Image 1 (cartoon, helix red, strand yellow):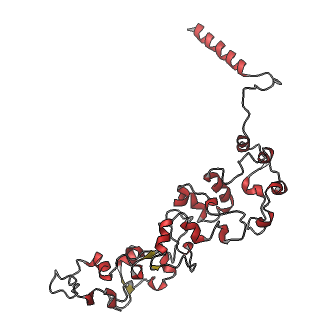
Image 2 (cartoon, one colour):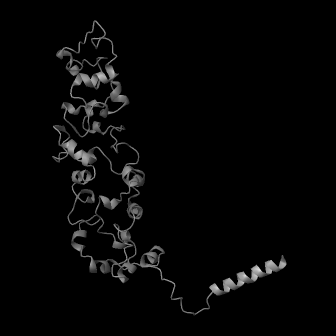
Image 3 (tube, one colour):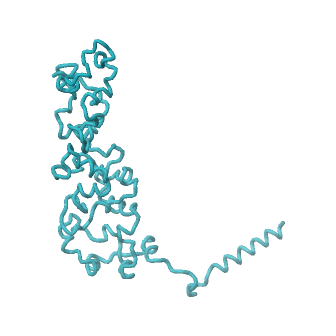
Length: 301
């Protein structure tokens, strides 16, 4: 047993001795040097200044009107010496070449102070691999609100194609007409508010920012309005039905909840509301304050 221990000790010493090279010995030609990106990652890159960057990237004129114009290029892109030395082959300073997580971290180094933006990586856009530069351009060719790559509605619809069809239906919110924007209702950086809605009056129903007369509270509340949300009855983007309802006839909309309400259907004679008669199919002719009332418990006024 002592002989075995002695043998293992000698073998280990020889192995370490072979791996340790004498000082001043040239490097092994078989060993590949670290790539430019690896060197940049390990922190060996150095800053070169804006003048060096602008020597190749002719963006001075367009960058002048950007909110970032008072920043150094390397404040966002990181040290660029290796990028310069490799003639641009090193992409470690490129927002589009690097992973979204890196790009987002660069932006959040300043914008994390914004409470909403700071949670971007937890939201639907962040979780699905989008980065800040998917929608924003740090130095655009012409000034644009929020440094967006395109007009807001066009930018959103380029991914959310189903919404384009909704906005072309007979009854719709005037987004394509440029009377309102997606961000009037949605917040693209939100964390878990679904479907990424803006908060209005402490409620997630962003509809209330325009339809403030439906805000309440009312003495007599209509339960679906208060407990659920507007989408219980309405299509938010557009519909083929008047008032953007999810059903083409008002009484069919109401019967989804009130089918068991006494005196409504003809199967409960004597039915006061005979649905077979057209006069009873427009419920809101009588129940006018359907979103809530301070006067009548059945929303007649």
